[in-house]
Amino acid sequence: MQAGHRGRGWRWRGSARQTVRFVEPALLLLLHYGPAHGYTLIERLGEFDLANMDPSAIYRVLREMEERGWLRSARQAEGAQGPPRRVYHLTELGNQVLAGWTRDLLDTRQVIDHILAEYEQHMERGQGDYHQERAKSGAVGRAGTGGA
Image (cartoon, rainbow, N blue to C red; front, side, top):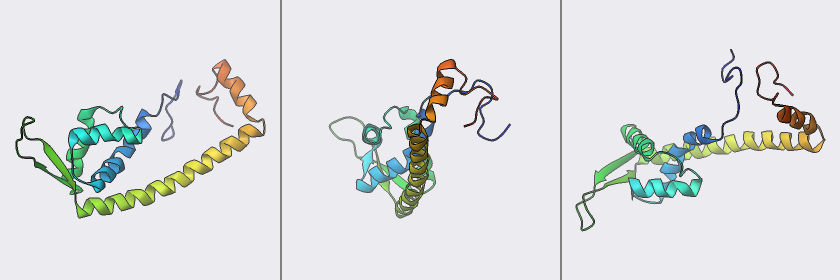
């Protein structure tokens, strides 16, 4: 079986698995704007259409990023609004990682744009009818029936 092949009966199940890889650069960018609490970061991930992620997963990512030295955190002094909360700050290394992510995202966008343009041209030439009929019949995604 080839890497990435899901096997018999594989179907596209949405983009949740694809968006996970964008959480790190989104968090780094949010912290580039300034220090923030975890809860605030989780809320602001919605600006990147990443609001559907489990908060515990986001805190796990923040912890891993801190272990890598990309950010640091400190407990905020107790205030009138309850117990102390952890405030996250971007480090210089985190700033460098964000710059690297930005370059990678630009490269990824070029690949995505190329794939989408090719697909659009394919559909505009009327060659998409074949694939649309196969999708209606349920043939798309079955093992052994892939291909263009």
